[in-house]
Picture 1: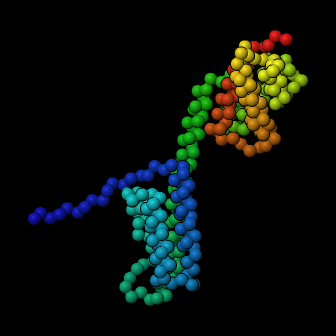
Picture 2: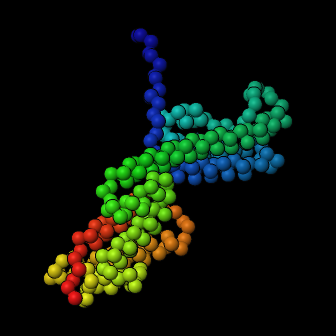
Picture 3: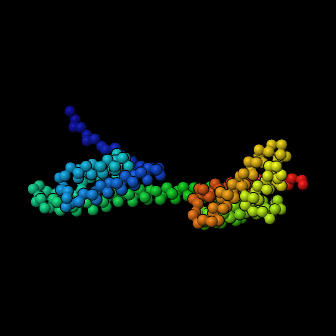
Length: 262
């Protein structure tokens, strides 16, 4: 019989992580670091079963996080908490010395795997931000909204972009309605009132649209303008894009609204 060819290992596979998988992987690897750091060489000897348990947990975690054919698992599928040469009949003190030296070495190994995941997380964040910013460039914003927020958004000032867009909407409503004496939610309730509106979106044969839009304008002030005028926490690029698109839509509705005869 011809000699059997040695079985070739499957090709390497680079895992494509979701954001949730990255966070879970980092958390699991950090738990393995804690496991290693609990192995006090003054109290735990190298042949202790607790050492084997930690080594097996490290192997299982790397397998679970990166996959069986990943470069990470191929390199670290036989973890050993050990740093130094290995030979038969080593003196006991050397064995314990190399075991103790293996604890920080193993921690460094796990920290390296965490760093690799953190880099993947940064790449995902950058890719998502780039896509969202490209989508923002494609928005057909109302001119009054675009004038005040486009440069802020491009420069990464997302909170300020939303705040200035909401202020522009308020000013547009004041100008269109002539109610410069009111502001905020009171302005929106008075201008778009269902019972006695100043600006209407239809002939009021269907008052539900009027009422619904009144609440949207009111909500734009209460939920978008007011919190950003009193807090410094920033918006994500995704959230800012969606808020600005909503404010632009409302500005367009104001533009096409008609003044109700007195």
